[in-house]
Image (cartoon, rainbow, N blue to C red; front, side):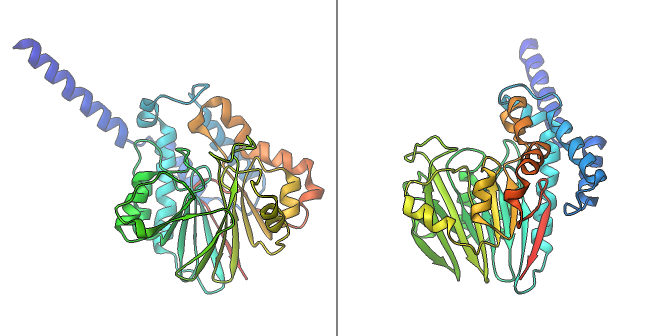
Length: 329
């Protein structure tokens, strides 16, 4: 009897410890979050560079070399800061009124992004952290959800199911394994296929995954035309399955915003020639300490400085998670 009582007490104490560890947010996390809120991402001065360095060091602290175990996501300050950043973005998405001929883009985690016009709110690759529920409010806020491929940092089936229950549209690459209670709300795009959803034109282009030449398990680039503005989102894709589609995309010449994976070479960005280039998939702390150094803003800045002649002509905007950018026609 005493053994059972001791086991019960130990279990209850463990549950209380885990709960308190989950909800308690240290002042260091709140302070850094506020610094980011007070920073202007369009002013790349020394204060901004210092903040970027502080953010990267914060995410790197205590990271294992490879992908962390699940308990790390529960207890870590990295998760707590990421939660605050996503909640900040969601509060802004909820409360921001966008003018006609204007678009506001929020950077989420990794390749996740939400953009809002006067008529539409669209979410792409808004996958969730383990043991974090901040993204789920997007199921009510966004009108259309797009997923480039089924990696866990891009694809959140729970969020998509919630979105479908809210009668939102979900756009996926052809052959995607997502099961829905309302299949009429799920559209799977063939390579080069264009659909129109509530006045938004969306085209999918089949690619491999990070240049692995495996098109069977690759993903999509998405071209989105909404309210007179054209967005191109690359997911983790690099090489196109269909060379004719490749030629079509690279000869567009009218891309307003390129949301491009940082693995894209500067020559790719030059040839796409967007008005604005927003590098994505930075700060990959969920992949461990071995990956984060290749994805910090400083690494991207150094690469772009090396190829600054090729990148001339496109405005470059370096957003931390939760930050936003507004483009007006």
